[in-house]
Image (cartoon, rainbow, N blue to C red; front, side):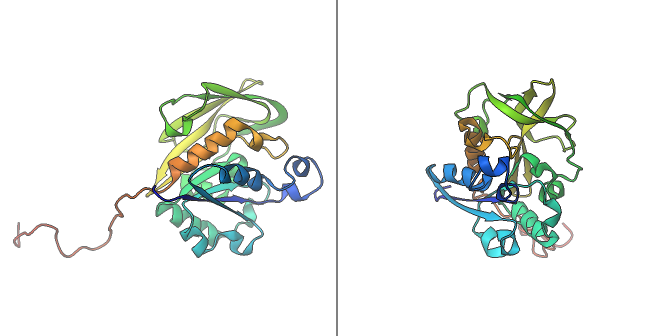
Amino acid sequence: MSREIRVKVWSEYRHERQPGKPQEVYPNGMHNAIADYLKKQPGMQVTTACLDDPEHGLTEDALKNTDVLIWWGHIAHAEVKDEIVDRVKWAVLGGMGLIVLHSGHFSKIFKALMGTGCDLKWREIGEKERIWVIDPAHPIADGLPESFEIPHEEMYGEHFDIPAPDELVLVSWFAGGEIFRSGCCWHRGRGKVFYFRPGHETFPVYYQAEVLKVIENAARWAAPMNTPVPVRGHRPEPIEDIKPGE
């Protein structure tokens, strides 16, 4: 894209507003930790939105002016209004990119676009996670090492109930022995979807350089391209000049 990529970072912003570890780790919210990094990157215009904003901050005008939507949700998936989910889904099908983070795997929008239950196994004891780049030629892997470690994270393990990714970029291994498909790409309509696993609210994962680099790369990959807009429906006039009966 020649112009700046318009990125909107969306979060429930519920955990961080209650006393405790999430607030201590992310005093300004996880969405702002991500947004603050992206604002420093060239070619990006970054805004934020939260669940409690009017229309969840995802009005029709807001989505029309968003190239890539980054989504973090956890305890309030059910509070996201169905009409807003439908609005976001059609924006993705029309070309907007969507990056779903961590527990957003259970969000209404991710389930709607995947068509599966999106369940998995999990354990929260703060164990080590090692993320391996298994597609080093993919744009989302740009600038990453062969693997990188997150010292403490919530474990997500297979089986992850998702459709087979169009492209699998990253795989996680946990100290407890589990593995997980942690960087998955799909195409939906004219839009692109990327799921990225890290981001439990009690750990400072969204300050880690490699994690933020993946999110930045994913936003660039998911940004709309100047591709043809499909024309559907009844088309009475043929493209070629034909005679009746041919």
